[in-house]
Image 1 (cartoon, rainbow, N blue to C red):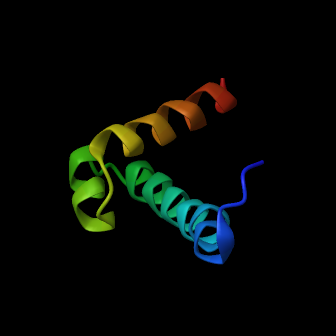
Image 2: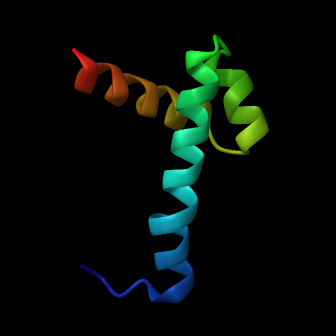
Length: 59
């Protein structure tokens, strides 16, 4: 793996998983991906990808 430094590590290992968990909880409550993305300040495509991934694991 490429050396991404401390801030990169913090972002990919701490921030992203927390945002993903929050997004999935919000989606489970019926919130749309675009609205979740707005609140979490990430792209709607990223949120939709997380939702799609979680649905494929469930099935």
